[in-house]
Amino acid sequence: MTTEGRTVVPACEGRAVRVAAGQRVSVVDLEGGQVGDVFAFVPAPEGAGAAPEHLSAAHTRGATNRLFPEVGQQFVTDRRRPVLTLVADTSPGWHDMLIPACDPARYAALGAGAHASCADNLKRALAETGLSVPFTPQPVNVFMRIPVQDDGRLRWLPSASRPGDAITFQAVTDCVVVVSACPQDLVEINGGAPTSLAIDLRS
Amino acid sequence: MTTEGRTVVPACEGRAVRVAAGQRVSVVDLEGGQVGDVFAFVPAPEGAGAAPEHLSAAHTRGATNRLFPEVGQQFVTDRRRPVLTLVADTSPGWHDMLIPACDPARYAALGAGAHASCADNLKRALAETGLSVPFTPQPVNVFMRIPVQDDGRLRWLPSASRPGDAITFQAVTDCVVVVSACPQDLVEINGGAPTSLAIDLRS
Image (cartoon, rainbow over all chains, first blue to last red; front, side, top):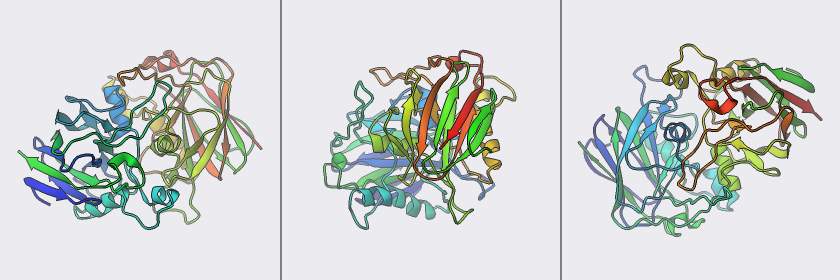
């Protein structure tokens, strides 16, 4: 894990970075049209035991009274404490907070055999930080385009982000941010061809 | 815990019932205008260890492609397995799947001191079944009216359910269902005066 600079997240893989309070972390869509599942954890000083405090999409919706993120808002944890602020976004602005991470059960239901998944990518990336979670928190799916129709129905559309588009968060507190370059190639959210992302970390 | 018949959930408290596959469980709003936080867990034969499989609002949204429940749909767990089917609803049909359970942090932010919460009610009710969870899953908030505006903004409105209104689920698999009569009296979702609910269990 780097403390500053660029970490490439290869297509279909995940990476973790430690982010200090005040640092900025950008998720960059290198080739365009690629969804990233973003997770954040606040390691407890006391270490193991309870599930680690984590960015919670549900608690964030309750705090912001919005379905989807907007620049200036804070993401909060399951303990309702701010962890990240959304400070900039050069993409068309589609980021999902409704859909869970893909996982082996999802790919099995789609008829695939062994398949990379954001849930497995999270586990693997997090293990390198010494953290573990007994479940997969609902991620913030950057660049994922899930419009909501008037009747409450959701549509899954290909990502509209362009090469180089970036969404930038500032850490409110020390945290571990995990980004998975979503390996979904059976549903059109990544345009059918998963590509890589980058995590840019700077003070 | 009863295996059939009525379990009253006193205002601001929670109760758990064991539901066998095929049984129907109704949540009844006895006096009207009362939100119920509904959780469901599938106890694993192997017992302790991992977090128990639970009804997941996020996975259910991903499976149904809808923000809110409708009669006929299934609720799925974090392992994407169906656990409950929504089979009947005599209420005006407002049920929320976006907002997390209230908890001590929520009431602290609202300026309250010690206050009952759905998260604490869950813990307490679940303990009587021998289960525990290291986190609070996002509940299905029956009778809770959270309309979504065109711009994605959420509104918190008083519950529109009438005395005797009921929402009925059928268990797809053996499970434990927990209902908390939401103690929220600082936000108008319960019309300011929390009241009791009932859980009706029948084969």
